[in-house]
Length: 425
Image 1: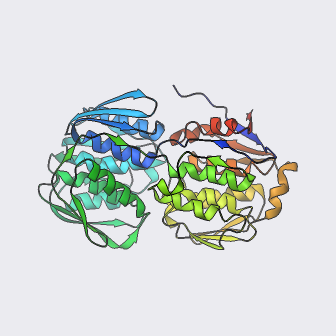
Image 2: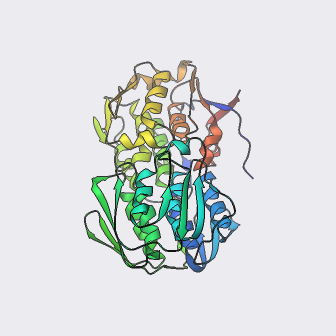
Image 3: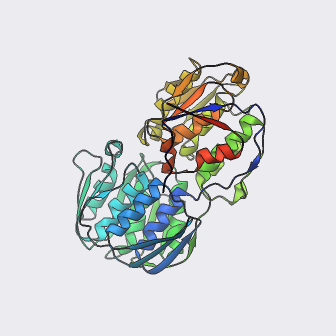
């Protein structure tokens, strides 16, 4: 049962290097892919190393609504038993603000013979899904999203079509992953092709392809940005989920800002997730590059931006326009909250984020800046700005419970390293 957290935490700068052993939680991205693929596979699949968080719990609940048995034998495992087909739920699927679950299920439920509504909370209802809906329509699927965002209504016939489908993935690679994972249920081979060259973090498509192949799919990239998927369906399998690279970025940030050493229990090179590339950038602190392209490690950008606030030179983050349609507008959120710590510390320039950097902040633990950090219901804003509080006195993180979306034990992790968290009204 989730623990109740206070309305806010004021973090006391430790004044010393933070060192220890921390095991990051399982990857949210891979957990939600594996849950869906196991639900589409006939038989029983055991998923180990999984993340149990708000986003993955919502995915599991939605799968149960569609006739899949999802058991949880321990804190990091799911046991998924399925007939290999989803059935129409009795009520709309509610997915909170879980982008992966919402996008992936929007395509997957098109394999159902019946009507399904995919919906989320008020924040999810602001996140675009029209490119995916348009692609489904091109396959002959009855899909509609009147606002261009959830809720989405899919009226399936149990058939997923065949042939070529083009998808605009400039806003999110999740649209591509959603189509690819549903494509093995086509009436024949399906060719998924990018409309244009732009795509969100391409590395996440590679995660999707690897997971699909583990569950028996036959998929091949026939040319750059084009994939051919055979109508094989899926077979149940045992699947191990690697630790979450996005969560690891906070641990790398702790090392950089406090001069400590965190043993993650996994080598950086062992990660297959694209956010792992942030480690090499953060490791250059306090001389991080003047320009950082965040296009292929988008979830790591808030972490890198907060670390960059203490850098020896200003840092410009480019290629990050997609951050405006995440759980919140993360470009604006990061700029706003850095400026609470020190006015003028960051600004938006178009879709770039310019962090002015101020190495003097490294000595700011003795000052009481009285910064109350608004987190915008966004787990990554909360976790990133907690790093700033390790060096700047008087920082309070509002709504710390929002970290339950992907890292339920985040605050316990900080406390285990000796960070003092003061509950605050």
